[in-house]
Image (tube, rainbow, N blue to C red; front, side, top):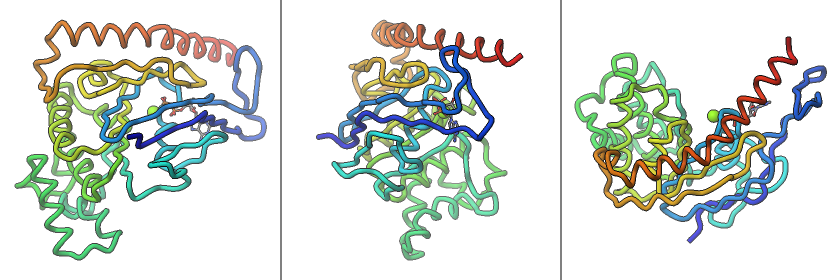
Length: 278
Ligand SMILES: Nc1ncnc2c1ncn2[C@@H]1O[C@H](COP(=O)(O)OP(=O)(O)O)[C@@H](O)[C@H]1O
Ligand SMILES: [Mg+2]
């Protein structure tokens, strides 16, 4: 069963008067970021999205999350057109985005508080999700008293309290050190296997993309469309050891092959743009 459908999504940003960008050798006042993106995501699927910087991955998540409107085309959740943030979805950003004046527990409670859930119920739910992430003893700590990895666990716990059907994650582990990142990937998989929500996870890391996903969606350089979808048929549950298998190496190589040309294309565009800017 399909959960999210994007059909022919385009997004063009109009720049301020006087501002221009050079596209294919021509100066223009508008920048097309997505150029007819089609993608269907099944219920409960774990999708990772990779592509060169600037290929429109964050813009795509923003459209699916109802934070911005497509210029043309549309995105749907369960057949309903997405026009504003939907309570069935939750968003996790790269920055931890916690309130510094609230404790870990109060941060996790926040999304429920906004929805008017009673204090007792939100306390209980927040404790449950913190403990899922091994943060049982840390409820009363403030963000500044937690490591980066712990802060991001709190942010993910907060996004899960509302029982989202779709979790949108924009490079949530990009700021973490490699070891913490590995651990959080495994924790996320373990919790996702329990919850079974649909995940759309943007990442720069091919290794992370393969480790997590049911399918890796590779985007072209801007203007972005889906270039190829790679099925990740590795068994689940997965643990970090799977990275040492030949099957994993083969899939990583396949994703990299698909991306290489696009990354080079994006770099050429930047070189051209900066050469003409000077
Ligand atoms: N509000 C905006 N106004 C103008 N350009 C934007 C705006 N938001 C994003 N862009 C441009 O859209 C392109 C794609 O952005 P983004 O989706 O953030 O890429 P990424 O794939 O790296 O996440 C970038 O070149 C960025 O400069
Ligand atoms: Mg981005």
